[in-house]
Length: 187
Image: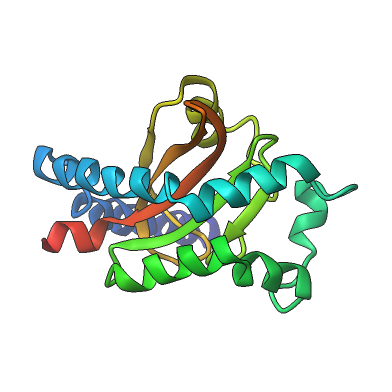
């Protein structure tokens, strides 16, 4: 009996989740808005403060010994995290997110090896190398768009887009930004 009740609860939860996602279908109109916002992200990626921050990080490389497992143990209140938010690029991203009236959910900047340079909020991973959101812009110099998903940190249904940070016409880093699908659906 308990197993039967548990399976009903799981089925109902699945139905509720699929109903919630029905409002976030990427229709041609929503895709047009995503594409428009991706152009804004490309402009952010070209900002001299962003390019300078990535180039400086590329000279240093990743934090020795830091991997994604260790990153997960770093608390948001630690100075390391405050440094990523408080550096020039982090402040730029935070300001742009705040100015977007919730259209942009969060942003993070990665250097050439996939390590973080800056963000407006701590990311789940320190290294994004090996993930399409990083690899595609770094290898092609073109933007990338992911599928709709629930952001674990912000609890916002969004789609991530990423743009290469270019120097001398070549990718040197990647800017990833979450676009709030609920906000786009209202526009």
